[in-house]
Image 1 (cartoon, rainbow, N blue to C red):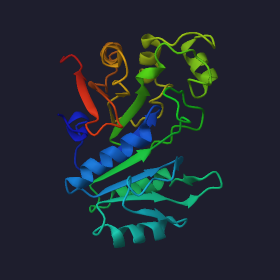
Image 2: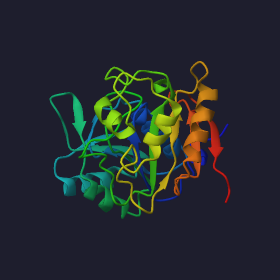
Image 3: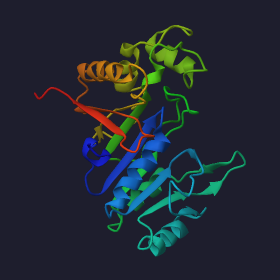
Image 4: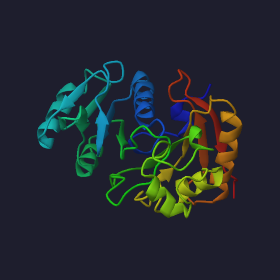
Length: 260
C-alpha cells in the first residue's frame, strides 16, 4: 500500500499547507506520524485555530505566546521528540491559537526540521468550503498546498448544514443556495484562484486530497471527481490523491494527470 509520503511526493524540507475541509487536521497528524516514525523531525501547527490535539496525535504540544521563546523551546526538545505541535495559547473556545505565517518562514530556515505541516484555514468540520477575505493564511515558504475535500459533499444541498460559508460558495460558483452540489462544482472550487487554493504561493505544488472515499460509491465518485479536477488543467496540479485519513492505510489511489 502506498504511503502518504509517496502519494504526496513529500520532499526533504517541505512546508506543507492544508486548506479546505473534510479532514485536514486528521490528515496533518497522520502525515506527521508517518514521517516521524521514519526518523524525520516534524512540526505541526496552524496559522488560524485548531482543536487541541490528543496525546495520541502529537507527542509534545508547546504553547508559547512569545514566538522567539517558542523557537528556543522547540530546539531544546527537538532531539527528544520526532514530532512537536506548536501554538501560541489556549482560547476560551477550547481551541488553540496558531502561530504567525512569518514564524513558519523562520522555522523553515532551521536545518534541524525535516518538515512543517500547517493547517492554514478552518471549515467547522464541513467537507467543503470557500475562503473568506482573510483566509487561507498560507505561509510564503509553503512548497506544497494540499486542498482537502470530502467526497460526501457530492450530491448534498448547498446549505450551512453541509458546507462552510455556503453563501461564499454560492457566489463563487453562481449556484443558488439549496441547489445540489455536483462534481463539476467541486472541481471548480478546488482549482479556481479564488477558491480553496486561494493565496497559494506561485512556486508551490498543489496536490488535492479527496477524503472519505471508503463511503458507498466513494471510490468511483472520487475517481470521477479527480478526473474532473485534472481536466481543469491547472498548471500546478499534476495528480490527485484519493483516501480515507482515518484509516491505518489512508491512501487508496493516486490519479495522475496526463503527461504533456
